[in-house]
Length: 183
Length: 168
Image (tube, rainbow over all chains, first blue to last red; front, side, top):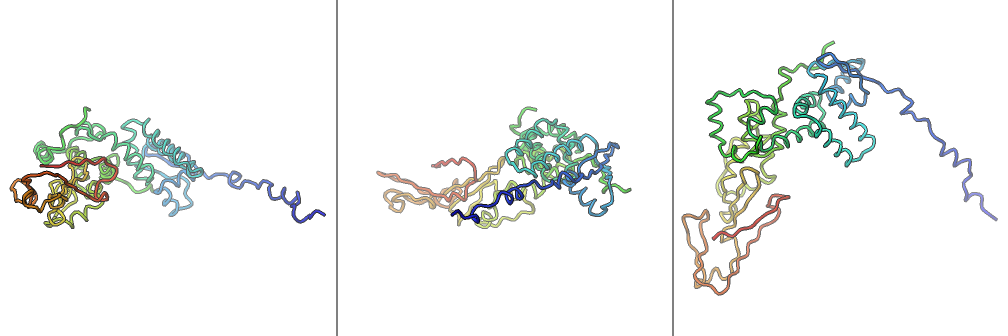
């Protein structure tokens, strides 16, 4: 005689496997509006905006706000920073270290020197540590073993030393100016 | 509505960002970049940058020095360690390679195992003004030359190909 208790009934199985309503996708995602210093409006998902520690703490202090003005941030670097953070959200949902590394490397490789330099203060101000690490490393790689003049033009910085100060500094570290790469 | 905290001269890179970038370059790049601008100079002299160039065990090296190392900044300490420093009671010398910050050690004759070094017909010990060490082993005659030097690998710079040389 077969034991009916050993085999689970089909109805129970079906009940267990029945799809649950997906609450995540059913819920409308909240959008947050960021306004750049040049008055461009960026509508981003809340999860992306929360990647910006500065914006996150702004919302913790005043939760009813829906537009965050960013008076120190212009539209171009902001759009690039948003693009980076959107991808990072995907990697948070589906961790894949190799893909993330590849994406981060490609993100900086295709950017101009100016794009990288302009994004650093933005990433610093918005406190996006992952992006800042990626940008700092990319910039360090691009200026390594380059001449002083090259570094100045890379960052768009003017020499603010007097001729005497400059000469004194050159004497102090004379060894460091030898054997740099061609610009 | 008020915006987030205003930063003056925001389009300029903050010193902290410059330090973070310079920490990822080399001692040579950091020294050179003092000349870029005053902000770069402040960053290039900062302890944050030079701490990253000093080897992880620099405190251990300093504590093993035969003379006290008094430095007011990490940069000064780094440059001091680029001139060789006698450690372990003067039996070894230690120095950092200036452009990369990599370590090099030199073992004195007293720190080597030299077969028959205490047998006066073969070797004798002398003090030579040109040597950084107080004593050197001088070979008189030999029928057998065997010199063995050992160094703990933890003391060497990680992920670096190390070379050994014997100086006569």
